Image (cartoon, rainbow, N blue to C red; front, side, top):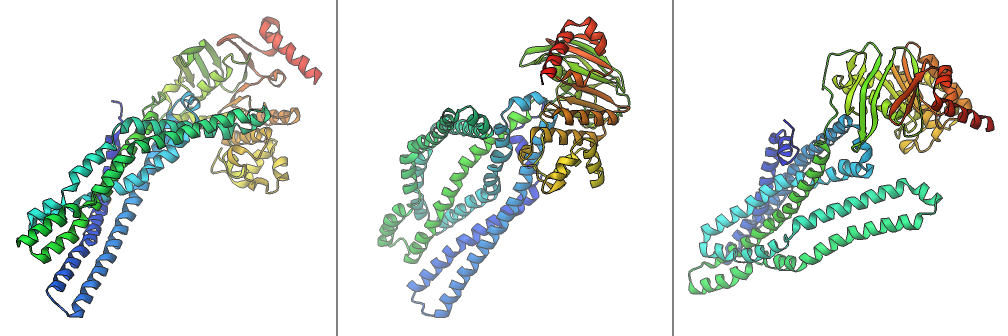
Length: 578
């Protein structure tokens, strides 16, 4: 049965922290009790003054008692907040971890089709914005509701007529307050959509700033950002403008408990049916009825915010996983690869039409063909980055859908022209291929990958920080580090998808030589436009329009495949001109 990611799922996460929440709520209730206690003490002071008590020590002790209550109120409030924040941050970490685990299990197509700004916004800002709601809502909502209830009960105990008088403004104020919620869902969802659009536009503008400057699109791109920012601001302004009168009436009436207490109290006092000391005590206590309720009302918006964020989180978590078992005792030994009648579609448009191929273990093969022919798609299906739509991909005779992702990922080293470097040192980026590798092993693999010399030329050598996405390095340098990382992994199946596209011919030859040595007794798949680099492989698969047009050695393809021959001649012509 499909798991539902909604409030019930969130309640399940909260349930794991029930014990701590009980302690937090208990501390919050004590904090509210000690916050209300001074009202009773002040009432007692007023009564004693009216009774003519002149003993200064009594008033001093009562004032010290108020101070003690205030200190205890702060202590228990802080204790409640500390506990609730601790468990809330643990819950947010669990939610973020589940989202990241989900992205690992999703097809690469979903991740690429979803703007990075949207995913980043959900994982970071949106999840983080639940912190205030979850950390404060449960303990403070409980405590703030309990406090006024206790005061009202005590007011009824003192005089039921005055208790009702203290509540006169609440119904009118609540009606006005409810007016603020008119069309709230529509308006709130509009702010979410506009804010999301602004976030995506900002990320697009920042990431594309180089292209924007080069092609002189600064004005139009900036106007797009300004337009998104204006729409984001306007939707909030219009919402606030529609609520301002309701808010003013509600915030004016709700706290005005004296509107009912004073005239009715004076009337009853003059009639002799209300004791003066009790009247003063009721006036003081009435101030503590509405303020906590107003604080509670703010949690209505927080609840709506949590609901909206959970919807966004659910949009990721409820995406269909790739078909893989969670765990298995399977051990892949053989690296034979076979594709049987494989079909694959992007957004319902089929791009692979019945691919059949077999790659022997320990062989080096190449995929060539025009751009968009399906070469990289086949490589990604073998690497387990997507599931096939129809047909089977087998590694060592095992269908990839029966291989857990962690086992397949350990078995395969995949390097593309767009490999990502993390914002850490060069040494640690390479070590990601094998976290147990020593510094010496990292440097050895860098030498074999043609990285060592340029790394040592940097100011901090292997400890140089590469910047966000490797931004401090050139495209060729990033690729060579990515190849070194893959080589350090020592996987049995190596896939190089245009992995040397940004390297110069000299370094490309060095890398090819190093990779060839490390690929001994391993299976390697190479995708390259520079045909001269793959002419000596065991077999070349010519891919055209989503089909395998031919498969043979370089020499045989020149004789039998017109497409390959034309590609080779074009490559040689360009190479000669260079």
